[in-house]
Image 1 (cartoon, helix red, strand yellow):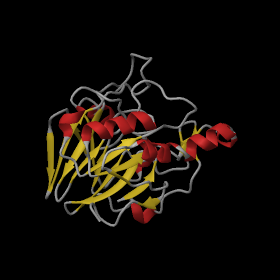
Image 2 (cartoon, helix red, strand yellow):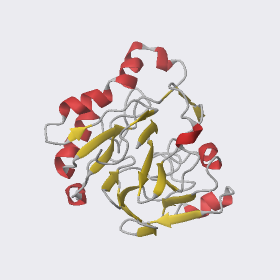
Image 3 (cartoon, helix red, strand yellow):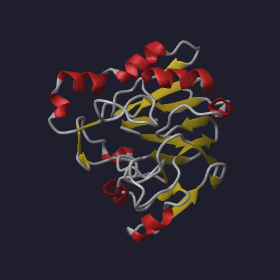
Image 4 (tube, one colour):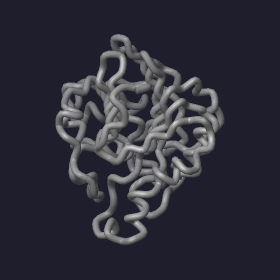
Length: 250
């Protein structure tokens, strides 16, 4: 596994290379990347791209255009919009539905987060319910996407590895997100063997990234999460762009 930044993780599992919510460019809408771009070798061979929801920092069209060879899996209801944007290899998954790719099974699970393309305040334009994913082959990996704690989260187990969001890109978090303490509470419910913090340390608004408060928010949430976890779960903090482990369970 490699944490490529924000919610993007490269996962090698079941003979496949999976990318989650890829953001692979220097800018994501109004946001700038504050860490180096991931090496092309870490994403160019992706077989499967999993999109958790339609927000621009998760469903990022310029990044998806770099990955046209891969199968792109989106929440049910988002496929037609992506087809209209010129992506022919798009498949949909709704909560409880499964996709099998070789030895890998991907199941869509609930996420407590806005599924609207333009955020929770608007009602026009593309909408599809946000989801997380459970990957199953030699290990069982929960990829949360963006979510808050929800009823039923404890039923996700058993989970070998959980990729959990611990912050975002701004000075505050809106509804439907986990902060370090919330992510630690999610660990208490899910009880994974390993937890990897994501959705931190990568994107910021221009200018704001240079403020002392934003510098702290770009560097501290993952470590605050690790300090808050009180279970036997091992927390692996990997800075954006770095390897998490050679293979799940290593």
